[in-house]
Structures are given as structure tokens and as C-alpha cells.
Length: 199
Image (tube, rainbow, N blue to C red; front, side, top):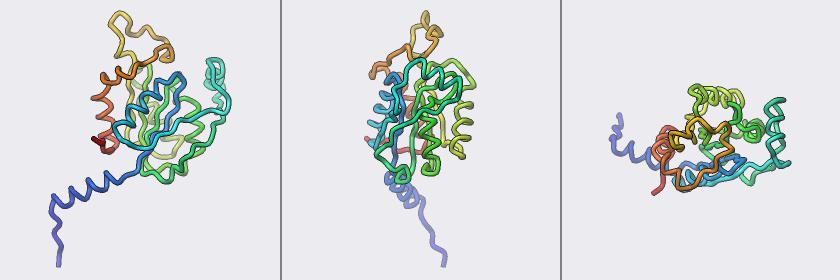
């Protein structure tokens, strides 16, 4: 005898499944811009959150050397086991078209513990091909594609006369209220990642 499952019952079961998903936000932030983004997204998801800290404090010169010589800085342990989470949202700045090296160090260390993941960054903006490059870098490091990748461009917050004038995103400090300008993009990212926003 064939059992027929109604669409409504199937939909309700899927909603319960998504609501039961355990999510984690993992971020690295040099200027606290991506930390503020992480906190903004956490307020929507009501999930666990953890910041990556380097063993040695980073400065402009150490970041430059990391980029030049592809160095991976040492990072401190985090108080969560990534295996306990269904989905992980990674966040970090983008430096010279690359994911910030402290997050890369973390990804290399934890790659076997990541089930599904997505990535979003608050960065300077202006490079039309950067998102695809980030996606490829993540896929290489973790051995699997992200569910979705998104960029929030600081450049879009600037007045017309100041657009494209910030050489490095680290020169801009975002105010928490400015994330309202990105709310539509953030919601699009969360929907693409299959994450349920808590009311």
C-alpha cells in the first residue's frame, strides 16, 4: 500500500528540520568591521558565535608579510567543536583579493570538521570578479563548495564624491546603524544559505 504524504505535512516537516539546525558564526576581524557584521547576523539567527584570535597580534606589516609570503599565522583554539554544527557561516575581511590569513589558518585546521558552510564579507568592493575568486579559494582550502558567498561593499556606503577613494577597507570604520543599508543583501545571503531567521 502506497502512503501519500500531503504537501502541507512535508512543508511543515521541512520547516521543523530547518528550525532544528544548529548554526555557528565564525569570524575574523582586524578592524572590527566584520565583527560588527557577525553580531548583526547573529541577532537575526540567534545562533552561537566565535571570533578567531591570532597568537601574535597582527599589524599592517605582518599582514603585508602574510600576503607576500603566503604565511599562515598561528591562531588560538575556539571553545566550540565545529562537528556539532549543521551549518557554519564564515566571515572575514578580504586582503588583496584573498581571504584574511587568520581565517585561512582556521579553515585549514578545521577542514575535516566542517559539514556545510557559507561565507560573507564586509570589504572595500569594486572588483567584479572577487566573489568567484573567494568561492574558488574556499573550495580549494575546504575541499567542498560553499553553499553561497556574498560581499557587502563599503564603497556603496560612500557619497558619490568619495566612492572608489578608499584604497584599503581597513581605513573605514562602519557604524552598526549602517548595516541597515545591507539588510536586503544580508537576507538574500541567509536565504541562499538555507538559514532560518528568528523573529
